[in-house]
Every structure is written in structure tokens, then in C-alpha cells.
Length: 231
Ligand code: URA
Image 1 (tube, rainbow, N blue to C red):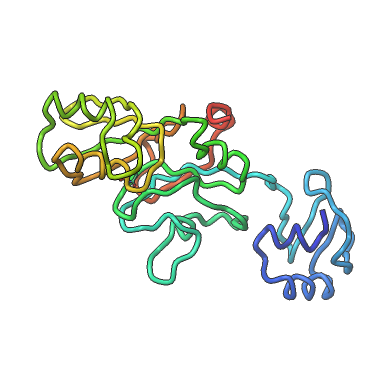
Image 2 (image 1 turned 90 degrees about the vertical axis):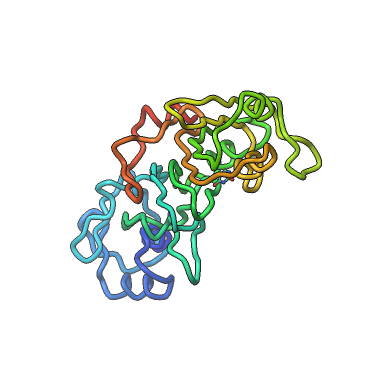
């Protein structure tokens, strides 16, 4: 990889700024000041220091974070009005990170943030049928027939009804497990059975569960074990 590209990936600034930093001797590779932006480097092998800070100490090409998304934050990379989920992730290495799919602004819970586009694509591909589990607080208690309808599939105004799902009550809260990702799907499913979502929280995606230690707004890196669960 080119040195300037690596520094860009580290989020150090614009291409122009980075070229200036390099030209001004602010970057060393394995102890030698390097002034050519196109110098070829390997961040897994070389030690790259910018202005006294080692950038390669914990460099990983792919980064994976588990965020407990709070309400009031949008699942976008940029927004002119609202705080985005990326505004919550302050890693220093945040170039190219993006949320894996979306949760509504008022939805809380598990959101994976990564720069691994392939993994993201796999998890979101409709063909892969990755399960998503939600805790749903509803305006009215759910009747047995309503649970059954949610499980069998309901007409939410799309071309086809929703695919079979799992729906059960635990500690007074509806758990809904779906393996599609239609727009506002859970809210529309509850509407289709004459009810309404008053609070929605995602607690699982595939085999990855939300860490109960993470408060809304908190995040941490995925462990290798968790990553394997997703792959
Ligand atoms: N379904 C919804 O209606 N909203 C979400 O945020 C996620 C699933």
C-alpha cells in the first residue's frame, strides 16, 4: 500500500494535507524519515510513526465494532442535522467505517460497524437469510392469534407478505425473529396485526448477541470469537 493511502486510511486528513505532512518530514517508516508519498509500505510489517505517534501498533485492515445504538441517532455515515452512529465511534482509524444495515432513529440495540464491505454485504444479502431478533414493546398486549399471524407472515403493503418468523412473549416482551430486512419491517408487521410498536431494540444478528454490558451509546471491538460467529 502507498504511504499516503495508509495515512489517509488512518483518518489523518485530506490527501493534500497528508502529502504536506510527508514532505515536511513528519512521517517515519522503520525509523527513517520518508518524504515520498508514493513509498510502498506494509502496515503489518513496517512501523509507521506520525508526529511521534505509532500508527501501526494496533493497525488492522478490517475493524469490527459492536455498538449499542441509542435512540435519537441515525444509522448513516453523515447527516447534516442528526448525530450519526459513526459520530459515536471515536477510534482514530475511522475511515471507511459504515454501519451494517440500518436501525430507525428511534430504535435501540445491536449495530455492527465495520469497514469490511464483504462481510457487510453477506450479512445483508436477502439470499443469506441472516436472523435478526428484536425485543418489541407494543401498545397493546398481543393475542395468540396475532402471534400466529406474525409467525406465518403478514401483508405489510409490499408485493409479497413477510416470510415466516418466530414470535413469542418472554417476561411480557415480544421477541420477534425475522430474516428479512424490509423498510420499517417490525413496525409495519405490528401495524398489520392492529397493534403498534412503542419501543424497539435489536438484540441479535445472526449468532451475534448484543452485549448486555454495553449501555446505549457504548461500543467495543468484536472479539475474534464473535467475529467467527458472524463469518
Ligand atoms: N424494523 C423496524 O421497523 N425498525 C427498525 O429499526 C428495525 C426493524
